[in-house]
Length: 221
Length: 212
Image (cartoon, each protein chain N blue to C red):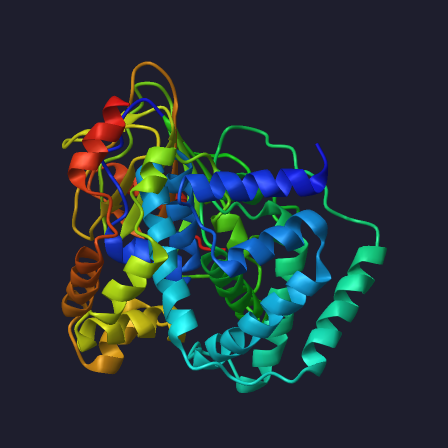
């Protein structure tokens, strides 16, 4: 990664990710960001040490000796079974968790036109708090101006886009609060693909935006 | 080069650069490289009781005490199976085993709850974290001893929140409800704790990284 990332998850999110208490939809986004961000990866290694220290400081609870035998037995059983570990082929240089979702055999995501310049592919993530999806904006494409009724988390996976505030590059992790009105625009030099987790329906502010409402309907799976 | 010489070298390298040479780390390396059952039994003796306490500390919705020994078993089986992938330059054995336990605990809960269509295991989220991390960044990390020390010196209310989050498995929002504190207060206590423990990558260092 040559460019320095400017947008990171906040420390509270990293702590929750490290403790395993972050909602799965958001954990997917943090995990995607880590693919690009050395700084957050290093910080997480330290945060894991907190969990590890707290675990070892606790009063140990007695474990029956037979448990070790049971574990050894299961280990031996497992080792006589043929290994089913198949190296999964990586289809792109996308983050691992995103590739897993793209290759989900139970629900193969597909691209669907959202507007003239935006396509969406929704993921099945087994929760209903967030819609998790990829958005693809064509080069120079404008998305409809919209605001949010709920939080939206976005990670740039490929290319870049800009809004009224800044330019966002691969790996940048953005949070949009309810009420933030913005109009992202794809960079001129190529398509932009973003991962997003969206907490509630978004409302179009463009007078003709209502035409797209059925397609923008939040659709967590 | 034979196996023993290789692991001997690895230990020497670790010693030279003052990396992790605590006994658990050495035992875990032995399990990974030589499938050493005696080493595994020693790890089990030390970690199984800690893992059981970690399991019992869970206040996750849907967790019940009967799952505790299941978790101990599942974690220790994973430790055996994945030991070869353990990299002592990135984490001590204790921290590595904690991450295995954390992932197992979450996955067990997700399997029990019926809303299960998430095609990911918790360790999948951590896949990226195993990518190359510059040694210079790793070196910035605090030693486990220092961290333990600074953790024990935290004010009680900061320590309490970290325990709720890491051991009980509460989100910041859940901790705020339980403690009757605004979410902002919970978050700022956590941030203060991290600052005191000096485990955040400093802004100056980020600049340095950029110029590397």
